[in-house]
Length: 535
Image (cartoon, rainbow, N blue to C red; front, side):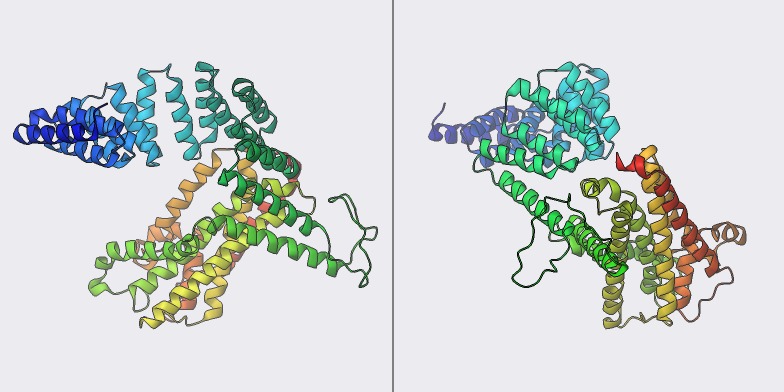
């Protein structure tokens, strides 16, 4: 290997040569690779970028640059050069595969999947290609398709333990616990008892609700990889959850001071006398609050910006809508009220409350599957906790945003607070009922999630959020007024703005929708409860 001084001299000569003639860029790329091997990655990346910039038409330089940039972790630049190479030669498998690698590193899963489809048409025997295909589909939430691709990867390379562990993870996500554990055993037969094998076992047992087994295997993983902070945190989290579960299940001690309580093993001990309705309500309230706090931590607690995003979401919608549609009204005049931003907010907030409630509730049973192993926690508790979280979140957002509007001098004080709040509650009830209904349907029809997501997207444009129904052709309005979300938004606006009392508004129709949605949702849940419990 050349000495550092020798490399410096080579780099200087290569830079001089390429400045004199861009055709010498490949020599600079070769020197850049030698710099990387010497551990001088920043200099290597700068040199190879210079080579590619001076002679972007040389595919040899771009290939060398793409490979080197991937190695030093500059995925964005590597992807840019990979797109150039693939655009010039779509049949180049190496350039496309390295482009896929960069896209996956940047979490551009949809574009990576498109390139993987093309790559696998030409290289159907690529086990790594199918493994990456499964990973991209998993990131996009298409777990059944991901499992099919993972199966092909395992068939093509049966001795790869990582492929088998990835397949185990997919099986676990789909609720196939026994199959997932069998796949982990197959991986263990290949690579032995390693930390990651023990960790996968722990995750699978955790998903199945067996916290004791999950903790045992997590401790084994920690012992096999001492000093691994991720394993330390994982074990600590599992132990805290087990302690919280036991605390949730045990009623408060009502013994006399100084009296020693009789220990009870887990949840096996049952009260000999059925508690009164007050105690039952108090117990159910504790469960509901615990679930609500857990859902809040799951949704917002992963990042410090989690709670901020709940506030930024409606603001981003307002910024987009206002910038696009402000010019459609003469002088920027709002269709109702005196300010466009306030008008749009009274449509965006109810829509987000509806859509977030639907999606949050319909996925809550799957997300809280381990908790449903606890006898005291029922489906209704999980569904209601997630629905209440969305209601409280949007209520807080409304107060904060409207207060900010008032401080900025905007006319953001509702004319009839009770009427506006009633409309907001009504649209939440509709969203909650539809979410409960979908939670059952999704268990039997996996694609329903994607189908209904498209319906909710369509409601964004057909619910009068920014296009006032009064300005629509009469025949269009006569159709759209059957939309309960549009009716609920107009209900809220009629309470917010003194001048808005549309003739098509039917509050009873909105209430009927909410009642019917909740009734149908919980009827389906009750009829299918046994099958949902073994999901």
